[in-house]
Amino acid sequence: MDGSGPFSCPICLEPLREPVTLPCGHNFCLACLGALWPHRGTGGAGGPGGAARCPLCQEPFPDGLQLRKNHTLSELLQLRQGSGPGSGRGPAAEPAAPSAPPSTSEPSAPCAPEPWPAGEEPVRCDACPEGAALPAALSCLSCLASFCPAHLGPHERSPALRGHRLVPPLRRLEESLCPRHLRPLERYCRAERVCLCEACGAQEHRGHELVPLEQERALQEAEQPKVLSAVEDRMDELGAGIAQSRRTVALIKSAAVAERDRVSRLFAEAAATLQGFQTEVLGFIEEGEALMLGRSQGDLRRQEEQRSRLSRARHNLSQVPEADSVSFLQELLALRLALEEGCGPGPGPPKELSFTKSSQAVRAVRDVLTVACTSQWEQLRGLGSDEDGLQKLGTEGGCPPK
Image (cartoon, rainbow, N blue to C red):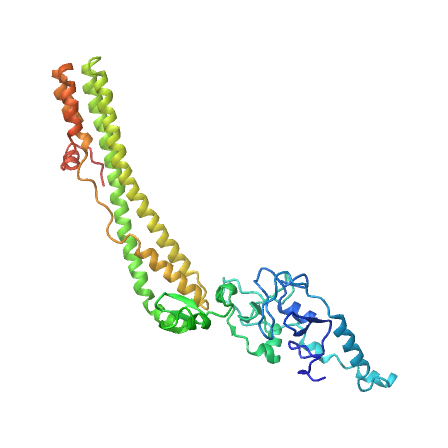
Protein backbone atom coordinates (compact mmCIF):
# COMPACT_ATOMS: atom_id res chain seq x y z
CA MET A 1 0.00 0.00 0.00
CA ASP A 2 1.17 3.51 -0.70
CA GLY A 3 2.93 4.74 2.45
CA SER A 4 1.74 8.30 1.83
CA GLY A 5 -1.98 7.57 1.32
CA PRO A 6 -4.78 8.71 3.61
CA PHE A 7 -5.01 5.24 5.17
CA SER A 8 -1.31 5.08 6.10
CA CYS A 9 0.32 6.04 9.38
CA PRO A 10 2.63 9.07 8.95
CA ILE A 11 5.06 7.53 11.47
CA CYS A 12 5.59 3.95 10.26
CA LEU A 13 4.32 4.57 6.67
CA GLU A 14 2.38 1.30 6.90
CA PRO A 15 -1.42 0.80 6.75
CA LEU A 16 -3.10 2.05 9.91
CA ARG A 17 -3.38 -0.56 12.69
CA GLU A 18 -5.77 0.26 15.53
CA PRO A 19 -6.11 3.81 14.21
CA VAL A 20 -6.27 6.74 16.64
CA THR A 21 -7.57 10.16 15.56
CA LEU A 22 -6.13 13.19 17.35
CA PRO A 23 -8.16 16.38 17.93
CA CYS A 24 -6.31 18.03 15.04
CA GLY A 25 -7.75 15.37 12.67
CA HIS A 26 -4.56 13.40 11.92
CA ASN A 27 -4.62 9.60 12.20
CA PHE A 28 -1.87 7.37 13.60
CA CYS A 29 -1.37 3.79 14.73
CA LEU A 30 -2.02 3.45 18.43
CA ALA A 31 1.23 1.51 18.83
CA CYS A 32 3.23 4.17 16.96
CA LEU A 33 2.01 6.91 19.28
CA GLY A 34 2.78 4.67 22.25
CA ALA A 35 6.34 4.13 21.00
CA LEU A 36 6.83 7.84 20.32
CA TRP A 37 5.59 8.84 23.80
CA PRO A 38 6.26 5.71 25.91
CA HIS A 39 5.68 7.50 29.23
CA ARG A 40 2.21 8.69 28.23
CA GLY A 41 0.82 5.40 26.98
CA THR A 42 -2.86 5.02 26.17
CA GLY A 43 -4.13 6.32 29.50
CA GLY A 44 -3.86 9.95 28.54
CA ALA A 45 -1.86 12.53 26.71
CA GLY A 46 -0.42 14.24 29.78
CA GLY A 47 2.62 13.00 31.67
CA PRO A 48 5.92 13.92 33.22
CA GLY A 49 7.37 14.97 29.88
CA GLY A 50 4.97 17.90 29.47
CA ALA A 51 2.07 18.36 27.04
CA ALA A 52 2.13 15.94 24.08
CA ARG A 53 1.85 17.29 20.54
CA CYS A 54 0.78 15.90 17.18
CA PRO A 55 3.90 14.57 15.38
CA LEU A 56 2.54 15.95 12.10
CA CYS A 57 1.33 19.49 12.87
CA GLN A 58 2.74 19.96 16.42
CA GLU A 59 -0.67 20.97 17.84
CA PRO A 60 -0.68 20.29 21.62
CA PHE A 61 -2.98 17.63 23.04
CA PRO A 62 -5.58 18.76 25.61
CA ASP A 63 -4.71 17.73 29.17
CA GLY A 64 -6.13 14.32 30.08
CA LEU A 65 -6.92 13.32 26.47
CA GLN A 66 -7.75 9.61 26.22
CA LEU A 67 -6.24 7.91 23.13
CA ARG A 68 -8.87 5.47 21.89
CA LYS A 69 -9.27 3.37 18.79
CA ASN A 70 -11.33 4.94 15.99
CA HIS A 71 -13.74 2.04 15.35
CA THR A 72 -15.37 3.64 12.30
CA LEU A 73 -12.03 4.17 10.57
CA SER A 74 -10.94 0.67 11.60
CA GLU A 75 -14.02 -0.87 9.97
CA LEU A 76 -13.40 1.16 6.79
CA LEU A 77 -9.84 -0.15 6.68
CA GLN A 78 -11.05 -3.73 7.08
CA LEU A 79 -13.60 -3.27 4.28
CA ARG A 80 -10.93 -1.71 2.07
CA GLN A 81 -8.51 -4.56 2.71
CA GLY A 82 -11.27 -7.13 2.12
CA SER A 83 -12.10 -5.62 -1.30
CA GLY A 84 -8.47 -5.23 -2.36
CA PRO A 85 -6.72 -7.25 -5.08
CA GLY A 86 -6.53 -10.96 -4.44
CA SER A 87 -9.08 -10.93 -1.66
CA GLY A 88 -11.42 -13.40 -3.37
CA ARG A 89 -8.85 -15.94 -4.53
CA GLY A 90 -9.01 -18.07 -1.40
CA PRO A 91 -5.93 -20.31 -1.01
CA ALA A 92 -4.14 -18.49 -3.80
CA ALA A 93 -3.59 -15.60 -1.49
CA GLU A 94 -1.55 -17.78 0.87
CA PRO A 95 1.84 -17.03 -0.85
CA ALA A 96 1.54 -13.51 0.53
CA ALA A 97 2.83 -14.91 3.82
CA PRO A 98 6.35 -13.38 3.43
CA SER A 99 5.16 -10.28 5.24
CA ALA A 100 7.88 -10.77 7.84
CA PRO A 101 10.32 -8.16 6.37
CA PRO A 102 8.34 -5.25 7.89
CA SER A 103 9.28 -6.68 11.28
CA THR A 104 12.82 -5.46 10.59
CA SER A 105 11.58 -2.01 11.55
CA GLU A 106 10.55 -3.24 14.99
CA PRO A 107 12.96 -2.32 17.80
CA SER A 108 13.44 -5.94 18.92
CA ALA A 109 17.20 -5.95 18.40
CA PRO A 110 18.50 -2.38 18.26
CA CYS A 111 22.13 -1.86 17.51
CA ALA A 112 24.38 -0.44 20.23
CA PRO A 113 25.30 3.26 19.99
CA GLU A 114 28.71 4.77 20.47
CA PRO A 115 30.18 4.10 23.94
CA TRP A 116 29.77 6.82 26.57
CA PRO A 117 32.69 8.23 28.54
CA ALA A 118 33.77 6.08 31.45
CA GLY A 119 32.09 6.96 34.71
CA GLU A 120 29.22 8.90 33.12
CA GLU A 121 25.70 7.45 33.11
CA PRO A 122 24.34 7.59 29.53
CA VAL A 123 20.99 9.07 28.56
CA ARG A 124 18.60 6.15 28.05
CA CYS A 125 16.21 5.58 25.15
CA ASP A 126 12.64 6.55 26.04
CA ALA A 127 11.13 4.05 23.60
CA CYS A 128 12.94 0.94 24.87
CA PRO A 129 11.20 -1.29 27.44
CA GLU A 130 11.54 -0.08 31.00
CA GLY A 131 14.48 -1.71 32.74
CA ALA A 132 16.19 -2.62 29.44
CA ALA A 133 16.59 0.79 27.84
CA LEU A 134 19.68 1.18 25.67
CA PRO A 135 21.81 4.35 25.57
CA ALA A 136 20.26 7.00 23.35
CA ALA A 137 21.94 8.08 20.14
CA LEU A 138 20.01 11.34 19.65
CA SER A 139 17.35 13.43 21.39
CA CYS A 140 14.39 14.97 19.54
CA LEU A 141 13.48 18.49 20.65
CA SER A 142 10.09 18.19 18.94
CA CYS A 143 9.08 14.87 20.51
CA LEU A 144 10.82 15.66 23.84
CA ALA A 145 12.26 12.14 23.88
CA SER A 146 15.60 10.40 23.37
CA PHE A 147 15.97 7.41 21.04
CA CYS A 148 18.48 4.63 20.47
CA PRO A 149 19.57 3.92 16.85
CA ALA A 150 16.80 1.34 16.32
CA HIS A 151 14.01 3.63 17.55
CA LEU A 152 15.27 6.50 15.39
CA GLY A 153 13.83 4.63 12.40
CA PRO A 154 10.55 6.61 12.25
CA HIS A 155 12.48 9.89 12.20
CA GLU A 156 14.54 8.63 9.26
CA ARG A 157 11.65 7.15 7.25
CA SER A 158 8.66 9.35 7.91
CA PRO A 159 8.46 12.70 6.08
CA ALA A 160 6.35 14.00 8.98
CA LEU A 161 9.17 13.38 11.48
CA ARG A 162 12.11 14.10 9.23
CA GLY A 163 11.86 17.82 9.96
CA HIS A 164 12.25 17.35 13.72
CA ARG A 165 15.41 18.77 15.24
CA LEU A 166 17.72 15.99 16.48
CA VAL A 167 20.57 16.86 18.85
CA PRO A 168 23.09 14.87 20.89
CA PRO A 169 21.44 13.17 23.88
CA LEU A 170 20.22 15.59 26.56
CA ARG A 171 19.07 14.67 30.06
CA ARG A 172 16.79 17.68 30.61
CA LEU A 173 14.91 17.98 27.35
CA GLU A 174 12.17 20.24 28.71
CA GLU A 175 14.74 22.89 29.61
CA SER A 176 15.81 23.07 25.95
CA LEU A 177 12.35 24.32 24.92
CA CYS A 178 10.86 27.78 25.29
CA PRO A 179 8.22 27.44 28.05
CA ARG A 180 5.99 29.95 26.29
CA HIS A 181 6.14 28.82 22.65
CA LEU A 182 7.30 25.17 23.13
CA ARG A 183 9.97 25.70 20.50
CA PRO A 184 13.69 24.82 20.72
CA LEU A 185 15.94 27.42 22.33
CA GLU A 186 18.22 28.31 19.43
CA ARG A 187 19.19 31.95 20.05
CA TYR A 188 20.96 33.92 22.79
CA CYS A 189 20.03 37.52 23.60
CA ARG A 190 23.16 39.41 24.60
CA ALA A 191 21.14 42.38 25.84
CA GLU A 192 19.26 40.36 28.50
CA ARG A 193 21.62 37.35 28.67
CA VAL A 194 18.93 34.70 28.15
CA CYS A 195 18.36 31.77 25.76
CA LEU A 196 15.27 32.07 23.59
CA CYS A 197 13.43 30.59 20.62
CA GLU A 198 12.86 32.13 17.21
CA ALA A 199 9.39 33.34 18.21
CA CYS A 200 10.74 35.19 21.25
CA GLY A 201 13.45 36.74 19.09
CA ALA A 202 10.86 38.07 16.67
CA GLN A 203 8.60 39.47 19.43
CA GLU A 204 9.87 40.53 22.87
CA HIS A 205 13.53 40.68 21.82
CA ARG A 206 13.11 42.44 18.50
CA GLY A 207 16.01 44.80 17.93
CA HIS A 208 18.29 43.02 20.43
CA GLU A 209 21.57 41.45 19.43
CA LEU A 210 20.72 37.76 18.90
CA VAL A 211 23.31 35.11 18.09
CA PRO A 212 23.17 31.30 17.75
CA LEU A 213 23.73 29.36 20.96
CA GLU A 214 26.83 27.68 19.59
CA GLN A 215 28.40 31.03 18.69
CA GLU A 216 27.70 32.48 22.14
CA ARG A 217 29.00 29.37 23.84
CA ALA A 218 32.25 29.58 21.87
CA LEU A 219 32.62 33.20 23.02
CA GLN A 220 31.78 32.36 26.64
CA GLU A 221 34.14 29.39 26.63
CA ALA A 222 36.93 31.72 25.57
CA GLU A 223 36.14 33.93 28.59
CA GLN A 224 35.65 31.04 31.00
CA PRO A 225 39.32 30.88 32.13
CA LYS A 226 39.20 34.60 32.97
CA VAL A 227 36.00 34.14 34.99
CA LEU A 228 37.37 31.13 36.84
CA SER A 229 40.58 33.02 37.57
CA ALA A 230 38.57 35.91 39.00
CA VAL A 231 36.59 33.42 41.10
CA GLU A 232 39.80 31.94 42.46
CA ASP A 233 41.16 35.40 43.31
CA ARG A 234 37.93 36.37 45.04
CA MET A 235 37.85 33.12 47.01
CA ASP A 236 41.43 33.75 48.11
CA GLU A 237 40.44 37.25 49.25
CA LEU A 238 37.46 35.84 51.11
CA GLY A 239 39.67 33.23 52.73
CA ALA A 240 42.02 35.94 54.02
CA GLY A 241 39.05 38.01 55.19
CA ILE A 242 37.53 35.04 56.99
CA ALA A 243 40.82 34.34 58.77
CA GLN A 244 41.05 37.99 59.85
CA SER A 245 37.44 37.97 61.06
CA ARG A 246 38.06 34.82 63.07
CA ARG A 247 41.08 36.43 64.72
CA THR A 248 38.97 39.49 65.49
CA VAL A 249 36.24 37.38 67.06
CA ALA A 250 38.80 35.53 69.17
CA LEU A 251 40.37 38.84 70.22
CA ILE A 252 37.02 40.30 71.28
CA LYS A 253 36.16 37.22 73.28
CA SER A 254 39.57 37.13 74.92
CA ALA A 255 39.41 40.85 75.72
CA ALA A 256 35.98 40.50 77.24
CA VAL A 257 37.08 37.57 79.42
CA ALA A 258 40.20 39.41 80.62
CA GLU A 259 38.29 42.60 81.36
CA ARG A 260 35.63 40.72 83.30
CA ASP A 261 38.34 39.15 85.45
CA ARG A 262 39.99 42.50 86.24
CA VAL A 263 36.69 44.16 87.03
CA SER A 264 35.63 41.26 89.25
CA ARG A 265 38.85 41.49 91.28
CA LEU A 266 38.42 45.24 91.74
CA PHE A 267 34.78 44.99 92.74
CA ALA A 268 35.61 42.31 95.30
CA GLU A 269 37.62 44.94 97.23
CA ALA A 270 34.70 47.36 97.32
CA ALA A 271 32.39 44.67 98.78
CA ALA A 272 28.80 45.58 99.52
CA THR A 273 29.08 49.31 98.79
CA LEU A 274 30.12 48.67 95.22
CA GLN A 275 27.88 45.64 94.62
CA GLY A 276 25.28 47.56 92.62
CA PHE A 277 27.98 49.42 90.68
CA GLN A 278 29.69 46.14 89.89
CA THR A 279 26.51 44.75 88.35
CA GLU A 280 26.10 47.81 86.11
CA VAL A 281 29.69 47.71 84.87
CA LEU A 282 29.57 44.01 84.11
CA GLY A 283 26.38 44.55 82.16
CA PHE A 284 28.05 47.34 80.24
CA ILE A 285 30.85 45.00 79.24
CA GLU A 286 28.37 42.35 78.16
CA GLU A 287 26.54 44.84 75.98
CA GLY A 288 29.74 46.05 74.36
CA GLU A 289 30.88 42.51 73.68
CA ALA A 290 27.51 41.50 72.23
CA LEU A 291 27.40 44.55 69.98
CA MET A 292 30.90 44.12 68.60
CA LEU A 293 30.58 40.34 68.32
CA GLY A 294 27.31 40.74 66.47
CA ARG A 295 28.95 42.93 63.87
CA SER A 296 32.09 40.82 63.47
CA GLN A 297 30.27 37.49 63.43
CA GLY A 298 27.76 38.88 60.94
CA ASP A 299 30.62 39.87 58.62
CA LEU A 300 32.15 36.42 59.09
CA ARG A 301 28.88 34.69 58.28
CA ARG A 302 28.29 36.76 55.13
CA GLN A 303 31.78 36.03 53.81
CA GLU A 304 31.45 32.32 54.48
CA GLU A 305 28.05 32.23 52.76
CA GLN A 306 29.40 34.06 49.70
CA ARG A 307 32.35 31.71 49.49
CA SER A 308 29.98 28.75 49.72
CA ARG A 309 27.78 30.17 46.93
CA LEU A 310 30.82 30.67 44.70
CA SER A 311 32.02 27.13 45.37
CA ARG A 312 28.56 25.69 44.66
CA ALA A 313 28.15 27.69 41.45
CA ARG A 314 31.59 26.62 40.26
CA HIS A 315 30.78 22.99 41.00
CA ASN A 316 27.46 23.23 39.10
CA LEU A 317 29.29 24.67 36.09
CA SER A 318 31.78 21.80 36.11
CA GLN A 319 28.89 19.26 36.10
CA VAL A 320 27.20 20.63 32.95
CA PRO A 321 27.34 18.07 30.09
CA GLU A 322 29.38 19.07 27.08
CA ALA A 323 26.37 19.09 24.77
CA ASP A 324 24.07 21.09 27.05
CA SER A 325 24.68 24.68 25.93
CA VAL A 326 21.60 26.02 27.71
CA SER A 327 22.67 24.71 31.11
CA PHE A 328 26.24 25.88 30.48
CA LEU A 329 25.17 29.47 29.81
CA GLN A 330 22.76 29.47 32.74
CA GLU A 331 25.30 28.04 35.18
CA LEU A 332 28.04 30.41 33.99
CA LEU A 333 25.66 33.34 34.43
CA ALA A 334 24.86 32.13 37.94
CA LEU A 335 28.60 31.98 38.64
CA ARG A 336 29.07 35.53 37.36
CA LEU A 337 26.22 36.83 39.49
CA ALA A 338 27.60 35.10 42.58
CA LEU A 339 31.01 36.61 41.81
CA GLU A 340 29.56 40.12 41.56
CA GLU A 341 27.93 39.91 44.99
CA GLY A 342 29.84 41.62 47.76
CA CYS A 343 33.02 42.45 45.83
CA GLY A 344 35.75 44.13 47.82
CA PRO A 345 37.94 43.24 50.78
CA GLY A 346 36.38 41.95 53.98
CA PRO A 347 35.97 44.22 57.00
CA GLY A 348 38.97 44.77 59.18
CA PRO A 349 39.15 44.55 62.95
CA PRO A 350 37.34 47.22 64.98
CA LYS A 351 39.41 50.23 65.87
CA GLU A 352 38.00 50.55 69.36
CA LEU A 353 36.82 48.39 72.24
CA SER A 354 34.80 50.64 74.51
CA PHE A 355 34.45 48.16 77.35
CA THR A 356 38.22 47.94 77.99
CA LYS A 357 38.07 51.18 79.98
CA SER A 358 35.96 49.63 82.72
CA SER A 359 38.94 48.66 84.88
CA GLN A 360 40.28 52.23 84.87
CA ALA A 361 36.97 53.56 86.11
CA VAL A 362 36.79 50.91 88.83
CA ARG A 363 40.29 51.76 90.07
CA ALA A 364 39.26 55.40 90.43
CA VAL A 365 36.00 54.50 92.15
CA ARG A 366 37.71 52.12 94.59
CA ASP A 367 38.99 55.04 96.71
CA VAL A 368 36.05 57.35 96.23
CA LEU A 369 33.48 54.65 97.12
CA THR A 370 29.81 55.62 97.27
CA VAL A 371 30.24 59.36 96.73
CA ALA A 372 31.96 58.84 93.35
CA CYS A 373 29.76 56.01 92.03
CA THR A 374 27.22 58.23 90.28
CA SER A 375 29.76 60.51 88.59
CA GLN A 376 32.04 57.64 87.56
CA TRP A 377 29.14 55.70 86.06
CA GLU A 378 28.25 58.66 83.87
CA GLN A 379 31.85 59.00 82.86
CA LEU A 380 32.05 55.32 82.00
CA ARG A 381 28.96 55.50 79.84
CA GLY A 382 30.48 58.40 77.92
CA LEU A 383 33.60 56.48 76.98
CA GLY A 384 33.96 54.63 73.66
CA SER A 385 36.45 56.56 71.52
CA ASP A 386 39.60 54.67 72.38
CA GLU A 387 41.02 53.86 68.95
CA ASP A 388 44.08 52.24 70.46
CA GLY A 389 42.05 49.71 72.44
CA LEU A 390 43.05 46.71 70.40
CA GLN A 391 46.71 47.71 70.16
CA LYS A 392 46.89 48.35 73.90
CA LEU A 393 45.16 45.06 74.57
CA GLY A 394 47.73 43.26 72.44
CA THR A 395 50.63 44.80 74.36
CA GLU A 396 49.05 43.67 77.63
CA GLY A 397 49.10 40.07 76.43
CA GLY A 398 45.41 39.75 75.60
CA CYS A 399 45.87 39.23 71.85
CA PRO A 400 45.77 35.56 70.85
CA PRO A 401 48.56 34.25 68.61
CA LYS A 402 47.87 34.44 64.86
